[in-house]
Amino acid sequence: MTLPAALISLATASPPHELEQGAVGEAARAMFAHRYRDFDRLFPIFQNAGIVRRQSVMPMEWYFQPRSWPQRTAAYIVGATDLFVDAAERALTRAGLTAGEVDTVVTVSSTGIATPSLEARAMGRMAFRDDVSRVPVFGLGCAGGVTGLSVAARLAKAAPGSVVLFVCVELCTLAARLDELTPANMVATALFGDGAAACVLSTADNGLRTIEAAGEHTWPDTIDIMGWNVDPEGFGVIFDRSIPAFATANFRAAMEGILSRMGLGMEDVDRFVCHPGGAKVIEALEVSLGLGQGALDREREVLADHGNMSAPTALFVLERVLADPTRPRLMMSALGPGFTASCVSLAA
View 1: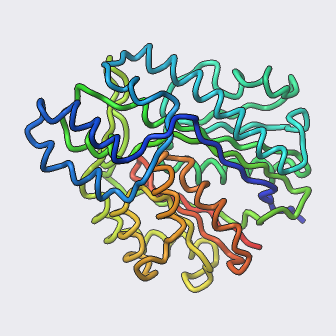
View 2: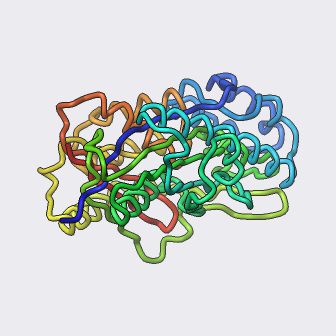
């Protein structure tokens, strides 16, 4: 009999610099209002984002000056490696394991480019074995926390008894742009935070939850909804304003299809654990899934405390939801570039 992969532990980590949303809004006004005639019309985004505070790898004043691609990359390599180590060490400690017991490391990150990748840069500090398998993954965007978890679970299941460490790190704030006077850049400036999460998976322990199944749905002709533009300055965000409306109209059918392929129905899910991309996206998911207003309370809490950190955000939500033992079957979901819905079912 093939043993399922279990989530043995989950930990999250945040960088040291705290950004209060009110201060970010006023800083954005100072940077953009005199150059962007639509700024006053868009400013309510900062006030209505559902965010109280966010964290970043750099202090706020770093963002006041134009930054080149090499400067952003240098900040990414240092900040992302530090967060990788922080989250990974916490997850291993909670699992009662050492880095030397890890057989495979899955690293998900889409907000910077590092070759060698982050787990290689962290090997000396973490004391991974020299024969550890490395699986870096780029390009999943906001769906990376969920898709990465499913990849890690499949690797654990394929090698029974092995230990798989999954680490997800995103430094979204490094994509802040002074040169892009666009609604998408204003939304990114109002929403983005930095963070990391790590999970330990194995078939050798019952763990917190069993990874029951995973599935994805990619809508055709939607590659322009979400992603990055890449130019000499670095990454520039692509956010289509239709994302909340698209989710309201299309997410439920995709979820029902994914559940059906798992042999489940909507009624079998005790708690949906969703990536809180923004206040309007949370509302759209509640409407689409028929959950009732306010049902995604943990999602709103994470958004308020950390902003949209892209891929790790859903794992921050999962960490809070796992504290409630009355929800035996959880369905994680996130929407990411593709445009893709990624889902993982976790059973008690």
